[in-house]
Amino acid sequence: MLELREITVNYGSIVALHEISLKVEQGDIVTLIGANGAGKSTTLRTISGLLKPGRGSILYEGEEIGGEPAHKIVARGLSHVPEGRMIFANLSVQENLMMGAYLRKDRAKLRNEFDYVFGMFPRLQERSRQVAGTLSGGEQQMLAIGRALMSKPRCLMLDEPSLGIAPILVKTIFEKIREINKSLGITVLLVEQNANLALEVSHYGYVLETGRIILHDRSEALRANEKVKSAYLGG
Amino acid sequence: MSQFIQQLINGLSLGSIYALIALGYTMIYGVLRFINFAHGDVYMVGAFSGYYLGRWLINSLGMQSSVLLLVVVLVGAMIFCALAGLVIERLAYRPLRNSPRLTVLITAIGVSLFLEYSGQVFFGADPKPFPALIPDRLISFGGLTFTNKGLIVLGVTIVLLIGLTFVVRKTKMGMAMRALSFNPTACSLMGINNNVIISFTFGLGSALAAAAGILSSLNYPVITPLMGLLPGIKAFVAAVLGGIGNIPGAALGGLILGVAETMIVGYGDRIHVPPSYRDAVAFVLLIAILLFKPSGLLGKGTVEKV
Ligand SMILES: Nc1ncnc2c1ncn2[C@@H]1O[C@H](COP(=O)(O)OP(=O)(O)OP(=O)(O)O)[C@@H](O)[C@H]1O
Ligand SMILES: [Mg+2]
Image (tube, rainbow over all chains, first blue to last red; front, side, top):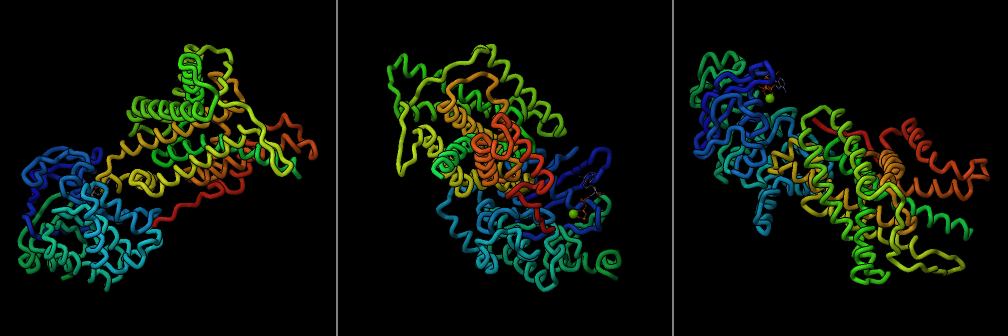
């Protein structure tokens, strides 16, 4: 469904990604793990059109999307929940969700997505009129995911959904990610520093180290891999 | 007492003009984070487009001074300036989207000078009498007498403010405008083409400036290509006073400035301030707000949880 072929990305003279290739099959949860500064966010930002690849190609549903502006890529059904969540703190929870549905033409059917998101995160429904900036970190993450779902994506990219969130909530959020994948059939590309969790929910994994993919395999296999164990799973 | 109320109405009516211009400054600042110094000149362009449209309607179509004429000229000038605003943004500012802010600011000053001096070339530098769009009337009740024009200015402004509030709070475009002022990157990730929202904002702000140009020309029916200079600066002060980027703040700042100026003219000599100091009021307010509450009356330091 999504494929990167030898993607190189530079920030000025710094090379952040060196000829990255990866593949996300339809219906899978694929994870990209790696240490701070490995280039995980850069990868997602390049796919979603926030950054332009220096070289290489990005195929989504068989079409080249590399270098296309971000707003056009969303329209293709590829949605990105960015690192740090980036919710609109000055808008209400409900307005944030409506912004997520900005491109939807079938506005009469929006009710379904609202119901789905509120069903998944009842906390958001209780606070739907509240200004989003007053939500807790965990609630903001729920909102960021809910907002991305409002565009009815076929593929969802999540950048560190566990960042700065209490452990119990992290568990809930990962359950929801699995549910989104199972019940809605949305393909997921998940970036995480918490490799344990990420390899648990995902089907396939890639390990990124200083801008290079050094390893990729089925997630169970990665969890058993000695190198991954010592470097990312805490021994 | 009755004189005070009359002064207050006069002040609000003057303040309406500042408020309408200030809204454009603040909305454009919201989406692009720069002060569009050419905005006062859009107000001038509004007045001139009303001048030509009004004269044409009166001389060629034989329309009489009436509410209808006023409405037609008002709407016509607003549409014309909205388009002018789009063109200015497209030609002057969009190519500089990724340039340093100073470059954009200097360009805005350039656009301002361009409009002022093109105005002198095309319209002539001599003052022009603005056509009487509506007959003069005095309206009195409760022992108070008002000019109909002062009340019309106030009334039209209220209608425009209500319309603007609706657009900003309830429509998809308005919501996107607020979202864009908070986080442009996140907007792109929602599928929003930020340039469309920026164009829309320029159009909206310029239309309001045009309305201000027409309304103020009702009361002071002499227009010149440089007429936007002082109101432009004062409206900028009003926007800062209310909190730059804050839409209700701009309206409030404008009204406060208008009332303060009128009160200085009316009562200033009681505190040994001659009426000729009216133009200094804005700058005293600017210095005061920058000293005591730089974020403005309604502006808040941004809170963002990470
Ligand atoms: N805007 C930028 N300008 C210059 N260098 C950048 C920029 N953003 C990221 N980098 C650099 O690119 C490299 C990859 O950064 P990236 O944000 O993709 O890492 P990451 O894997 O997401 O890390 P983290 O887990 O900390 O989020 C880092 O060395 C970083 O310093
Ligand atoms: Mg990152």
